[in-house]
Length: 112
Length: 115
Image 1 (cartoon, each protein chain N blue to C red):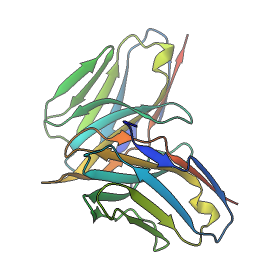
Image 2: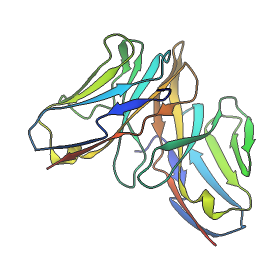
Image 3: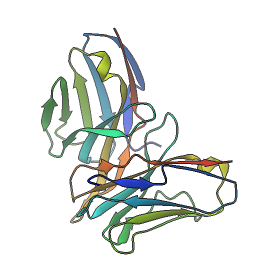
Image 4: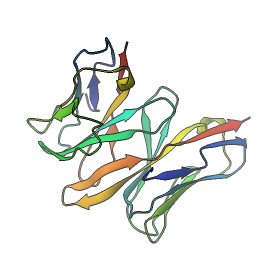
């Protein structure tokens, strides 16, 4: 597809479980961003990749959250020992340098 | 504290009225973005501003970035029910050779347009 693809679109898990969320950016986009959005709030910055490296991970809330982008394309956001407070929509966006951010439809995570 | 402040937080206007939404930061704004989001849906790109003093328009929506690049405004002329939604400003607070780092977003402005 031509847009940013995120999988799964919905994930329900139990507290304490491990979760992986995947983002497939637009081909050729070197910049990739992860955000978390709770109801009624704006997207909260988590991490920014330029190529394969995490240029800024200052938004990751704690060490249970980790993201990788090993080949500079697909990225995976990993959450260990999930907590109920992690429930949110996780958004991924990609762009060319200094260009428009193209967003995926998001992965809705529900932790029971 | 929020790095990008949006005001107002919510707005209810009569159809046909004009309105303005503001986005303010204490830091220089690089790559200022405006997006619209409907409840439960994805973000729709509206406009991007990069230069101080820049102004762009699309249909009845105009966005400006002030000269000092610390504030942007979004103005809607003759509002319609289709303009209803949540308006989000986003900005890169750091710029390097790779682009805009840490593009952060404001908390959003919820707009309702009454027919």
